Structures are given as structure tokens and as C-alpha cells.
Length: 123
Image (cartoon, rainbow, N blue to C red; front, side):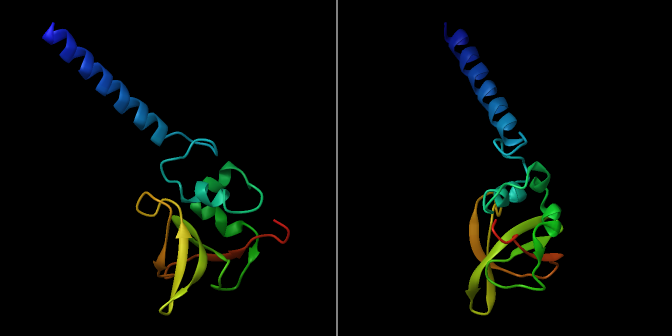
């Protein structure tokens, strides 16, 4: 009896682990992809631009050129995207998803940014 209970507990643990990995690696707006900063940014603009914007670099073509950093602008790096929400002690505050596996707002260096984009008017 003890062996049966142990075997059932092991099977349940394996099933739970597999389910968690499957959810972690799912794609699409309803399911969060493994690298999800772009996916999160889709929820932060007025109208969802679509799943191609799950890729951070795609945001370099969203909206219109902002010509540099300012509050409210989307900042794009090669592998990350966020929104500038303020300044603190001379540093830009950026809110982004998938920052240490969470949504965070913190001072970030803008070094290496490839684009600063303003959302389309009316979006």
C-alpha cells in the first residue's frame, strides 16, 4: 500500500511539473510566451497591435519616432521593451514586463536602446 501511495504522489508531481512548463512556454496574447516583455507591452497600448509584437524588437516599428527619451515613450532594446514612466535621480524610470520574471518599474540605463517610439495618436 505504501508503494502505491508513493507511486501516485510521484505521478501527480510529474504531471504538475509538465503542466507548469507547458503554460510557461505557450504563445499568443491569451498565453504568455517565455520571453514576454513584448507580450506585456501589447496590453499597455490602446489597441493590441497583434502577436508579432510579442517580439521586443518589433516595437521599433510601432507608432511614430519619438526622437529620444521622454515620459510616455516606448523604449526598445534588441531583446527588451518597456515604457518610460518618469525620472528619478537623473535616471529614467522604465516599466516593463519580464524584468526579472515580473512586471517592474525601476531606473534603467537607456544605453543600447535601438528606438524610442510614441504610440499612434488616438491609440
